[in-house]
Amino acid sequence: MSSSDASSRLHDKSPLRRKTEQLVIRWITSAAALLARVLPLRWLQALGDGVGSLLFRLLRPRREIALANLARVFGDRYDRRERERIICFSVRNMAKTMLELLKAGWLSEDEFRDFVHVRDEEHLRQAVERGRGVVVITGHFGNWELLAATVGRMGYDLAVIARDANDQDTADIINRARQAAVAEVLPRESVRAMLRVLREGKILGILPDQHTERGGIWLPFMGHLACTAPGPATLAQRTGSPIVPAFARRTEDDRVDLYFLPPIEVPDTGDRQADIRVATQMINDELSSEIMAHPEQWIWMHRRWREPPEEIIAQEDARQLSHGGQ
Image 1 (cartoon, one colour):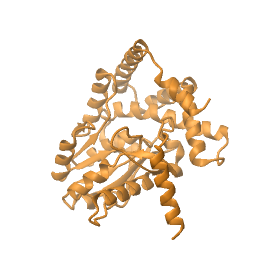
Image 2 (cartoon, one colour):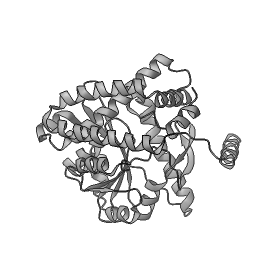
Image 3 (spheres, helix red, strand yellow):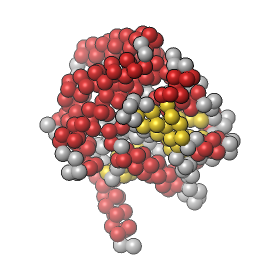
Image 4 (cartoon, helix red, strand yellow):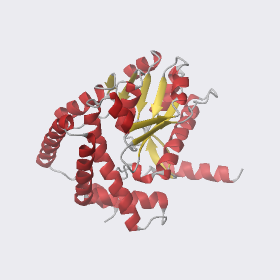
């Protein structure tokens, strides 16, 4: 099955089926939130492993998208068995990430420190000390939810931009878990609120690694054109905020290795759009580098690469010819 066939099946759902799926997800999320209060973290992680392994087997259209994505990025570096191993780890990681988010607010400081190991914090601290706010970027990589929770526990003021679940009750459960450690959860449309956070010298967390339907710019991501959100670079340009990449990699023993990278500075050449494009490509490059180094940590089931418009392909071909001629 091709990735386009799998995608068409994903979107070919009746209203009744969508409503039923939302209801089931709401029940599962509610049950998971209750279990998170009473079960030890290791038990929850074992449950996440089981749920993730089951989803890996059941979500065949999504699995085919993931296989196609891995083949696109890595070519024949991995055979099908190795690609399925990467995807299975990724799906189990997603299941555990959600359960760990629901558990995070119930962990003691000692439990949290045993679970999450932080390194290279100086990159974040020095950026915050500039007093112009900080845009922290990461991807749906490892336990991205615990990244925000950890930064909050470290004493920093922050807000995160989150895409709500389609069902409002489900979204409320998840956002309450986020708010247990994070001061604010902002919808993607709240540009004014994002600017306020940065102008107050706080941290704004953004995950710009998914396909953008509106206002995106087409740039290489892991070597292939992808419609990319310019929001982080635009916000940083308007406020003078540095952009700090951060990642929360899941280790083999189900702990989190959380680390910060040196800041990305938005160029200031006087050409605002060109500067945003350059900074957005720098963000894509940082995300791509970490994902390709640890492919099992990322969500390959997402349709990150869509078909670019013909004029975008022509522009990219011309750009490559120009660079090749230099």
